[in-house]
Length: 419
Length: 98
Image 1 (cartoon, rainbow over the protein chains, first blue to last red):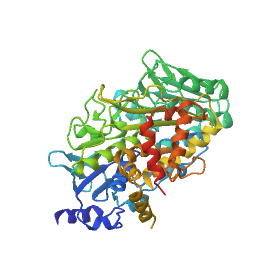
Image 2: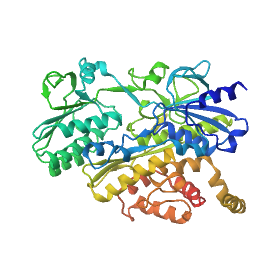
Image 3: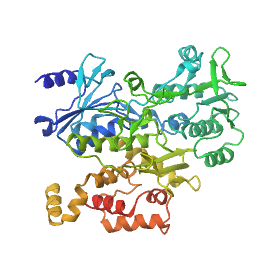
Image 4: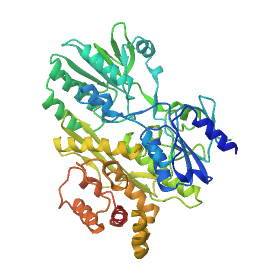
């Protein structure tokens, strides 16, 4: 009875589904999912697809989904923010209960999630898929520069994406756009290099005397290096300058300077992506296990190695060997977790051999695309998932054919998680 | 209606039913869904759906991707990540979808 009352409370002010006759009979177990991104939304949908006897409540503070993949094309100008925005309503037909609120605390002993609105959501199994939060403090001047509106990360798609596009549009021809990349691991390894292409593509058309200056904390391009460098040289000659081993340590917005360890660079638009770690709620809950940044999991179930009953997905995880922090991987994490949780809540053993795939498409122009792909399987020897020898790889060359596949990928993965 | 028909078809073919119902098979098939759609129902015309394709067809194409006889942009790299037994399982799962 208590639970039903609480669900009514949770429903208030949120788009909540009353559909689905399965919800009329008492649920055998309750799963709460925090975060409706590539990991969390996928897990919520797939649990309900595979076992309608499990009650799934999905907590998300944003009223709609905005995709990080493809968001660089909004900067380049060939897509709009509406092209990368989707609603959560499609999940209702699976009987997922959507709660528009923010998870502020988790009592892992009591197995209960507290929401900003005061509601408490008890759970039998919890999924935490919060994405990343930034370590702004590693660049002492960042906060002041951000408050002044003079530095953006645009590494979570949405308002920052639009603001960065506005700054690029307002920049005079002949200006310099600085893109600073943190040390790996960071969200979306090829993302910064795709962004350099997209901004260069816009400059080439709209303000051809302008420059893209990439300062990368890593020694070299971390993903698809050969393909990106070829695209930069052939499509944007003289526009993109790349510097490796160039770690940003501070930002001074009064002089529009990014300070590097040994040097400094000035720009008209500063796009500094700070280092990041697992999302705040994961940090607060004691799920971080490694380098004060990432959450280790058992890859057969995605269950935290630190807190029983809690499964961590997506960019917050301590990545398995050669596994990128990508939306595609988070989608696959969601399915491994969903499968394991369905088995565990039915008192059966979870699949001992999970398989995960990844395909990351990068748009080096409006039309031409390159990919990196991998397949990961459980290794009993290593007790983790590892890339299958001989599988995976990158594009032979950039192509328009892969441009078509890249845009199709986006539409299919958004549908796979949300509709 | 469709579900009933599938259920009837599966009851008549116990081997297919085993493959289609197994959590291992549906999880393997789910690894394809990010590009080919949930349960193999693609949301686009540009990438084919796998739902309802004959099992033998999916198996033969995956083998052709694996050994290089069917050229591809990415599938030759992904197909090599699956064992022949896993390909049989996921192909049976997609064949049973309508």
